[in-house]
Image 1 (cartoon, rainbow, N blue to C red):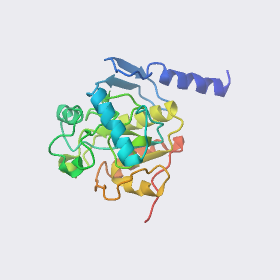
Image 2 (cartoon, rainbow, N blue to C red):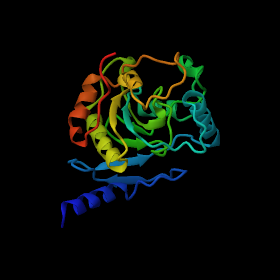
Image 3 (cartoon, one colour):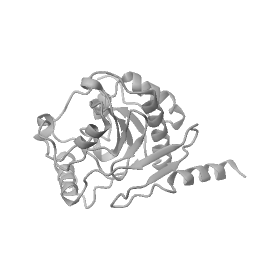
Length: 242
């Protein structure tokens, strides 16, 4: 059996139960990622993503990225890691679940009333939840939504404390491996606190020069732990310097 055939089998095993449909049905998908010593288990936990949220996403794409689109499907080029700044899974989920932005997000409400979202949410025990189709655009990072898959991690107390768990580190490593195998187009692994460095790349699309935020998540220590175990994937970090 050749090496290339073995790799093909490995990739097939990753994608066999991860096909995306317009509606996510509750199910458990278990795969074994390439070069990972532990199984990757993904539980579907859908947020509200009906016609109104889809229409708002299309409007966001037109306003902020200058694109008129028929669908909200993306070609992922970036994996972007976050923390929720909530210590509880249920509260974290409830912030992402509604279609419209919560009233306490006045910092970004002027840009759009589309609620923030993310493709994945990782609990403090490492349990991985898929919140929406992986290749639909989520609102989770300024300028890069149209090319990125977001992974939210429950934690980041006070939106300052780097308190993410070893179990979350392992799950993020597994997710990065899984996503890179499924989407060969992915080029970058980025922390939310690093997102503005991506303005130097062709992937940056934001049209509103005044629409920026300062982010701390998930911090350099967490990013280094994940990146150090996924270097073999050849993913790039953010450009450095001004």
